[in-house]
Image (cartoon, rainbow, N blue to C red):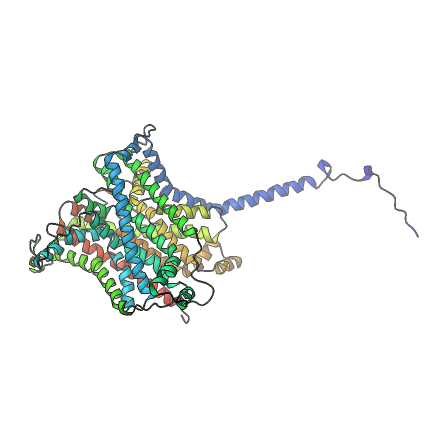
Length: 604
């Protein structure tokens, strides 16, 4: 049986396109509906990042916008009036005045000097603690971070008591033992000295890990080929630590340039005005806020430029110090310099902690308010003035405000940092990197500048926050956002997301998985972040300088104004309580860190 295959005419083939296809229209309907559902689902995924983006906009971006607007306009927002006047370039003309030029020069001198000094102290202590055989290594490590318990504000106050040219305790001691010469803390050298002392811990923390993780093979090779200790350090160890050293130098330089309290306490008596103190005078004294905004823009541009230069230096070469091989840093023998190294740490501890705290105790509890001879310091002690200071209403109100503000800012900052980090590292949101950049943006903006923007930005919003502690909380959260985000992110990156994803696959909602798995596993890191932000909140002054009122004054502001008004003993008494609060939080942070380290060790 055979079959005949006949060709089919084209006209006989049914058309499957256009309207003649009965499946065509329903197919397109399903396709469009499917794409719509996908877009709707993606949009729903972006809702949390969108809400967080709006929150960060009001915290960080809005203040920056108002600073820029004020710098190019003839007026600034005021309560009930959001008018900013007309456009002008005149506000930047203040940078060309003799006062403006001198404030720029002063800021550069003090920033560079304090940056170099803090880097020398901090990096040297870190090298001694991490790489050498110096005795009392634990003491050296504690010395490297201990001055963080004393805010630079309190350190400047204490050193004004110790080394004022007229009746400083150290000058009275030198006079008593017959040594000529007078120490004058109210000078360029005095300001650089104090800033260098209290920013050295930042350099210590940034360089300690670099020295600890350095590959010993390169140094061993140099030693085998006959390199001396000095040449080994100069040609191998120092070049490998350039990223950490450059980062520490830039950080200390920018912190010193934008510091307000030290420059105000020690610079004002000597007529040394820096950019932050010049901004404060233009805002609070001369009532020229638009000119202050112009200077603020210049200060911010300088900080950004220096940060960019640091990145160029670091990215120019490769600096691999830790490889996949087992690594144990080589202990460098100091021989007869062992005790010299430990003695250096002891001297630094005395200058940064022992002498300042001693000066505060003698001033707050000494029987004589004013002394003219060194022996008067030991004329007797009484807790009367300290008790009297603690019992005053403004002290109690300021202490309560400080605790409330710091607690609220720590809780809010930790939650916002967690959400930003979660969106960045645990979701597929396209806004993750943008949220990270916005969260880290306050690092490039001086705190006193961001405080100005927060004042103007929130004055224009129809919200009754001005004159309340909430505005101080907002300012504190904004300026400390980079520290909170970085701390939370480091904990989140150490935790694998598979556990959370497994819970979602087994039917748990995303919020429940975060609540029952992610947050409990990150509990230690979140508590550490909370305590860190609490300590930073207690220390905060520059960002809230323009937003506080008489009813919302905190301890840092009370210390500063008491010193300015000449109440030295009262300022010392307040400072002692201030330091005690910060020390309690700092010690709690260290205890949490030790517990976390033990928990991660095998067997726990």
